[in-house]
Length: 336
Image (cartoon, rainbow, N blue to C red; front, side, top):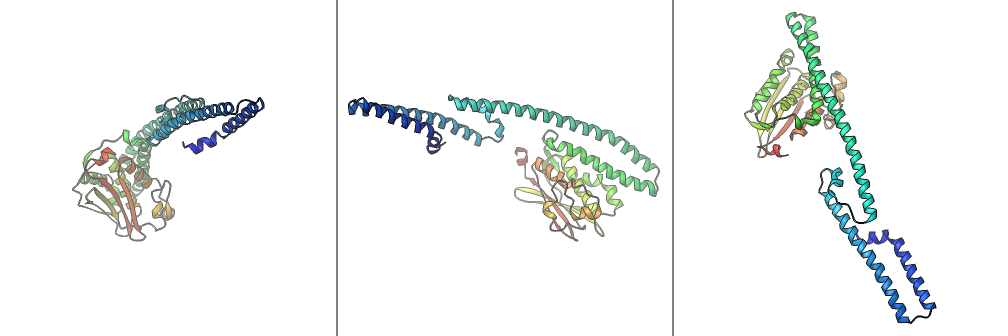
């Protein structure tokens, strides 16, 4: 709060007080008081008015400056009413009580939303685990009755399994911090695990996998990183080209370790690249091949953000795509 704004806000009061002083002066003039007495009375009245305004300005200035200072220092602005004190002037006290009441109501609404969100997440997780049982049974039946028909059914069931897994991780993505364990993990072990879990899909589609320069340890959660890599491998298989190849390797830099997943597939058009991580975006490839949900890469970016990682993509249409995941070196990400 500055003096100019304060005086502008109190302009009506100042105008009334000025009019009152003029009226008092005129009355004193009519009763023919001594001129010096008249001036003395007017000076006393003027000083009283200035004193009242000065006191009000100081009180409000101190309070509102303190409020603004605390607001600037808060990451969660809605907590402001919890840390400011009640002011000693009426209009501020009314504003304070209003803010407290609205904040309480907002917290109640947030609590209801969180409860509903948690209930929905628990339902999704239960549903996913229930669905996995008939999927596993179906795959076992197909394995024991191999023919061209069951092979086709098996491929479709694998797609269903992928979507079910996506649904599970998507439901958990808003509370990753409650479901991960940050520890030192081997990039080679995580990559090998992701490749192994997708081995059948890679073999059936004749995709050659090359792994090299992966002997690095990073601090992260193996389960979530493994899921991210699986999404990238599935995409590489889905949009493969002739003589398909997926190369996974890592490079060390002063402050981080970068993991790359590169394919020689159909690539992505230049105009689609900036939007590939947007939720629901399928682009030209999705429209042509009709196999995209627009969730996979979106989920990868969301999970990377939660884990303190960075993910980016470069692609050339007709030549292939490279995805980079950046792991902060040492334990820096544990502190973020």
